[in-house]
Length: 360
Ligand code: TRP
Image 1 (tube, protein in one colour):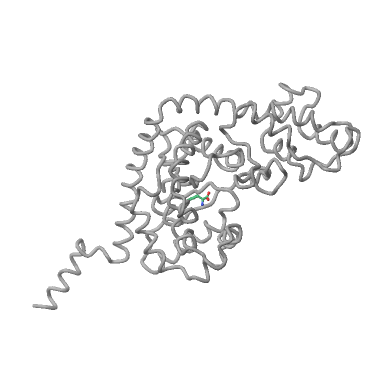
Image 2 (cartoon, rainbow, N blue to C red):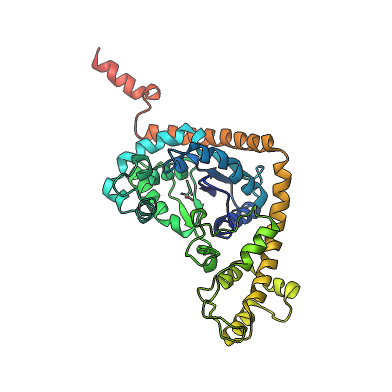
């Protein structure tokens, strides 16, 4: 069986280092591994509109930001198909048929939906489109016959819901859809990178993100202002590394090589952590090191971004070509789905023959 990747992001803002360690970096590695027959990366604008219906301009403006972030991280349009969700009507059509296979109570139990309803204060007035976006996400995944979906941990309930739809569809209409596997980040620190303020999640609305497109100076300022262990007041005090964002970022980003380049007095992160826990290692020194590590990772991304920024029409062209290619694949799946559901009347010669016998 072919190995096919599909994943995506809502275009509601620029992508940040949490997206990067949680998924983007992995996507590029998977792309470069050459092990996959196809890779689809979706800008999920229709999904973004489910909770931004009154602000399509925000979504419209951020499509290019996300595309630039993708390209600058090393996603290569020759090897990965970049596409815009709303321009593929087959996805909406699949969603409509899958809706018959999901109950309202099942959607109400989806933990991600529950959480988002709370975060957005929707409680008493949940838009139907928002409520059903897990079904649309199942359409995204199945339209491309994805076998592997690399996402962050918060997307697990979406994948479960998708698998249920696949099983239900296949058991009602016959084996048609591919059952996808989720692929989570392997490093625990990458699963959920906290904000620079130590809050559980990096999020645009909390203003605690380091963006891939931040200037070196922005990144430096953000790192130097990071929350650390509030009990670590003087350099000689013992400090905590668990739950300390500076060390969580180091867990996510740094390698032993970084120490030999920037801080040769330690050979690895564990040694540095031990010193911090014993006392005698100041936050500023740790932050300066983290800044070096981050700048080294972000620098090539910024350089590539500058190149792509010079040709914005070219970036839209990449998206148009990717979307057209993706639509052909989604259209083939939709044909399979309609055939399995026996709603492909004009190609259903048995049906036409049967009806004509009835009326002879
Ligand atoms: N829900 C995902 C997010 O919020 C975006 C997304 C849309 C997606 N469709 C997808 C992710 C399909 C994986 C597969 O980030």
